[in-house]
Length: 474
Image 1 (cartoon, rainbow, N blue to C red):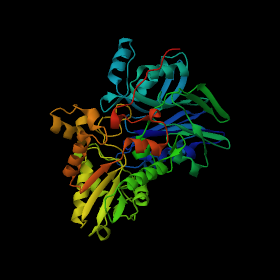
Image 2 (cartoon, rainbow, N blue to C red; image 1 turned 180 degrees about the horizontal axis):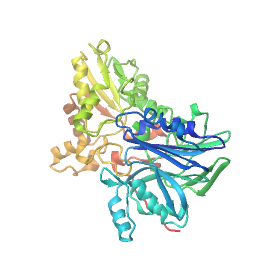
Image 3 (cartoon, rainbow, N blue to C red; image 1 turned 135 degrees about the vertical axis):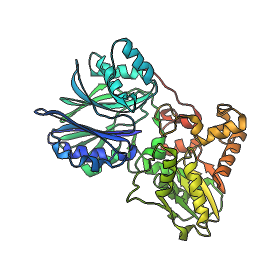
Image 4 (cartoon, rainbow, N blue to C red; image 1 turned 135 degrees about the horizontal axis):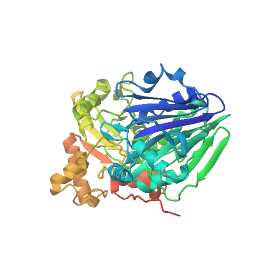
């Protein structure tokens, strides 16, 4: 996915920029970048890989070389950024959180107009540069950002650093969040509100879907009002979000606990204890414990000294090894007990299958899985929340293919809780993963826990229901 942070202040912004960006580190693991602007020195930028080191360790030796009262930082799971541009709009830098699915067709269209892309990432188009080129085609920044929204399929939120402020633009349907913070003499904008408390920012408000705002040290100017329609990604609360973060004013941990409590109240499965798979399954397990009336115990723990993040490598064999290494079972708690494990989701099933085998090896009598979202039946064309390159990497699609001889047949039936197809698929998931039982949250329960109307929440990966709408010309 990715995350970003920007700040503008009457004083130096460098420390806030450094630590604020770091608080988005759970959103990505590939690359990070910082850029500041100083009236005397101009733009200063650094980009580093995060695949072998963490954000702070990569930037701490050079952070003192940055100067200025305005800057952007980004944690990127896609291309190297920020991109610095010199155009008819002036000099500016841009960072994005984006999943643009029609990169190739847009680039071909630009090349026909003799507009070429120079930044390549692993032989792929750098989508942040492509966004900048689309911005440059506008008569001003607002027109350019609207041009981005008109052209792209998928989603794109962005921060643009100009010489006199930061422009924040949330993607047209608000799939990815942007929140504004304020303290005396400074404003900040970020993907995660959890970065604000320790830097003394107070949450001011969320940027709305399609809204464009400009931040200066002395205030905020709305350049384009938000749109009425919204499709914020439900997986922010299920998986991505840090527990203390709020999206649309709704806390991540509160949603997870409400989810778990509802699932626990509905479940009549006898069990001795419940445990959350760290990190995003913990809140659900705490709620389940309350709802089901069984104790919460830490039967498996994450080794946080060297595995602080939950994202894993793209290589399958290395991913499987990492998944095993970072979680340590507690045999004293597992032995002889009927254990319920709460987890955020099941994508491929590889990690959970290995965990289940380990739990039985350590003496668990029964292993039940309770998943805080519905089965993932559809791939995500908007956010790209997994490293999956194909829908066939989803365990649900492989099972549907085995049942139907076609991975795309009867998807609506398999996505409908309680249907014969759904029940057969879920039973097969449990069998293949070696579970005593597995139950998934209902989409109605998830939406109720989030507290937004269903029409404002993207649930495409569960039921294929979400839509994509292009910006209309006024």
